[in-house]
Length: 588
Image (spheres, rainbow, N blue to C red):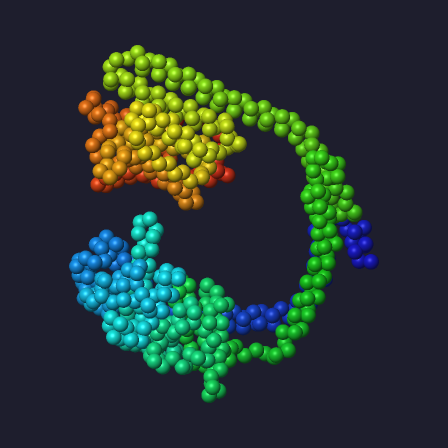
């Protein structure tokens, strides 16, 4: 018994593997034949990739033209929403676009009711009853369709259509741009002499062809829709037989996302590009040898290594603190190296069992102590805020009262931060949306008491941040919101309002604070500010590695701060947020 002899006579795993692998590699003298087969396969793969690349290069001009059409339609849609579809300026924009853009023959905007009141022909056209418009309304997204007799141009055209939406997301209509088939078919025909090209949509309908849109029968040999259902992101090639007995290589690949695809029929078949092989039966023998060698190698690895590792893995997986004794490993005649690993594992397991209880107790105590620290800091800050409030009541000077009130608000913000740190389920992260909600409530409650009738809107996406980012974010929110309330104005069409928004897109986050403008809600005749608030805003933004943007519109003032959240998994354990804070140091 070879395995028993190896187990008793050879203890080293290295020697066992050398003996068994030597047996396994004996039949591999014919590996050159297998390498030849691999070369043939690689050559076929390269030929397939070359056909895909050549097909894509042949339609590069059409792809650029269609992408420009999509982009231009989106731009025209935005312009119409601003100018108004019934405005003379709207028609002028469409006419100027067509006059200055040679490849396109028509541009227009169709309202949500299906009527085009703004177009490059200055003619009102009703599309509400057309099948194409009904289909587009069912799924309003960027599309390309054809019309053999365009209602606006009278030509056979491809029509690129892009939906238009209002700022609140409501469907407002669609912008369309027409490309004449005389142009697109000619461009496809000049792409290559050895291939016939066609552009197709996601349903398999042909949009344009190098043979002319009126003569697409040559592409009927391909079941385009069936091919599209199994098409991958890199495209595919296949061989098709024509009715006259000739064969062609078909190529189908995406051109623009999942909306437009290119179909190419190349002259000849795969046999024209195949590499002749030595003999059709030659790969069979090396395949059998490879299987035999593989079997021997796998059997050797399983007997010498895998069965022992599987047993160790099973013990490791079933190990629990409820029954730790079941986790120890006992192997049957393992190699020296694996036996050494098993002994080390058993020793490590015993050490873990001794230390785990003490470690759990230590961690629990530190967690309680840290939460208690945050709790007491919060209580002390609230006490300071109460003392400041008492002091404010005794001060008659408005300037001093305002300064003390700002200090009190900042102290309360710090108190809210420490409350969030000890009430959260984990000390490693902070629910930023809850923290900001408390800050907003604390600041606006004072403003609502002093100035009733203020509309406060808060929309905060769920976000978990490292405390080192949550702290400056909360302090920045306090400064921005206080500043917004200070300069709050009465708008013409409603009550004064303030809006706080935290938008989360993966790790990218944007904090925005908006306030209405108009006649001041607060009397601004007092002394000018010291500029400390703006310095704090800049300091907190710098600490977050963010960017601060200020936008002033007719009826509102908006401040946005965009930053990127740190990966919580990679952050250090929670620290004391305000000790040696760079933001506070930079503001002094």
